[in-house]
Structures are given as structure tokens and as C-alpha cells.
Image (cartoon, rainbow, N blue to C red; front, side, top):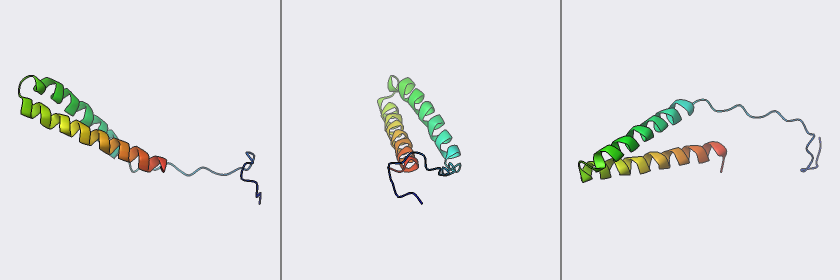
Length: 74
């Protein structure tokens, strides 16, 4: 076993990617795009609807960031 932590030639197998989060992330992205479109369209018609979809966009964006940070291991 090599004890040098800076050695680059040690062959290690990478961990397999988690595939369970892919459908959830795709659904979050689709919902974010739809909510952003509705926010833009409804902001001119009704301020309260636009605000509600704006809050939804922020929540979906936060969920995507949390999902990314958990996957990246930060």
C-alpha cells in the first residue's frame, strides 16, 4: 500500500454515480422552468400570483442547490 497522499499513480476505482436523484432533479428543473414562465406571465396580470410563483421559483432553485451540494459531498 502506498502511504504517499500526493501520489497520482495509485489506481483507485471511482464510486458509481447515484442514479436515484436523476428523476428528482429533472422534475425540479422542469418545475423551475414552468414556474419561472408563469411568474413572468402572471406578474403583469396579478401581482399576488406573480409573487407566489416567484417564491416557488426561489424554493425550487434552493432545492436544486441543496441537491447539487449533497451529491458533490460539500
